Length: 629
Image (cartoon, rainbow, N blue to C red; front, side, top):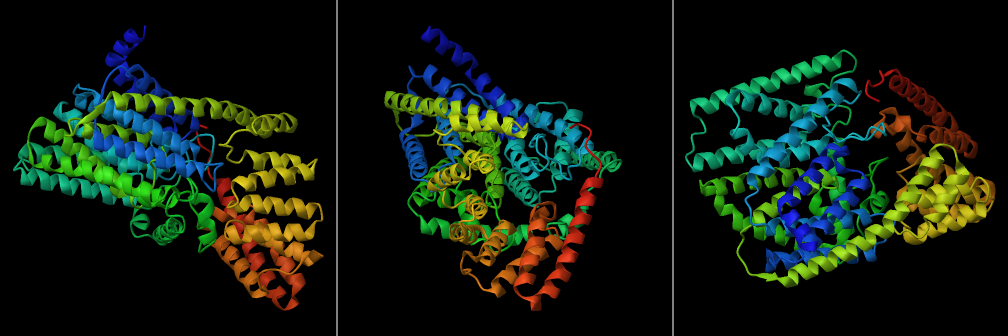
């Protein structure tokens, strides 16, 4: 039976993996946890059913991959924010197993991978075109969206996917007839332009420039009559599709001003540049503070707010793939990853001067890596399984045929051992993911008792995310002592989360334990004073009730209040739509009560803030609803 399954895998294993890739891209870009668990299941299956074969991955790459896996798990084991990050380590492990499996296959998969890439890219663009026209989403997102959440649209992630995918689709396009080449190329180009992702477009320009240089170096007929006509037709098609989609969208929704976007005068202005520079600096600071194993996978989200320089100037990642690894998993992991990629590229780069079919395929693969990695230096979207799995397949294709002796059976046995460990973790944590998910659904439906029961069942899980915060919120309504115990358990795992400290302060304040409340709010202030105005409100309210002396001066408090007020007046990061508006109003009252000299100034500005927030909320409420959901 095992042998028959192994034979089946030889025939259908590629189709299984490519089907998983297609599903990951088309289902929310692979952002959700179920896609991560599916990826792990496929990686385990492929590893087990090929265990009787000798792996052909060169020893140097295999060792680097295993070291990277080991460092990633060590980083998670000693993580300072261990309630998050397990999914990232699971993806890393599964992807490296998949790279090892795919690169060990002897068949030529270039045509199959190219056709699959073209098909998935077109389907994603077709779905994205419908969403762009029928939903109030300002930028093209392809399939990188979650219809369950108003804010979960990811145009930059789709832009990254296109950068990795389009060079792989070129060989499949070349095999098509002339009119279809132009129409499909133009359609894909139009969808990419409508993402309005400036960084992705710069990376795309780099890809095109490098490709032209390679063609000129190899004396290819890049400017032949047929090529010029095809390029002009594709560009004309792209322009036509852009205008057509924008005209259809304009019937119900506003269309982004291209000039404002290009000149950095759009809503986000130059903040996307200045904040990225801050994130990079903060990531370097984190990496030097914990250089060996980092703060732990996905820790940037919780540690960075303590270094933030402005209101809501926070992020889940540092907008740089290499700095993310260095800050979260440590410099050794970053160096190992960079070494593996550089060694592989150094071996494959000479092939760009070769004109054979295999060399041309490798050139397109390198071009995909160039554009995708260039964009990943100013953004980070590899957390999407749809993107990450494509990168893994590209690296695996480049690994095929690289020189160096393999470890043979040793590699296979090591891969099986890793997959068994991966399976054990997935089964254990997967069971609790189900119960905690049932709890969240019950809480959303208003069944607090059922939700609390499910959360209690989920307590043994390590990958708990915000489950304990939700449980504490329910407990605080009936049993504040239990809520305090739950929040302390959360902070034992992740003391960097300002939200937990703020929630603990509110519970202590309700219990009238003022000294403990002020201590909790002070900890929240140190870790995230720019994340929520409720932290400052809690500190002031507790101190004024006799909780103790504030760890900041009145001028500091007034400056922080002004920072929030100014952010609301320009609706930075859509703050005017959040509860920060109400917190700012309460802080104004507290500051006025404390010192009447600043009261008039604060009250006047607060009136302006509240009026502007009403205007922004009315504007959002007046936006036409989507037609799809």
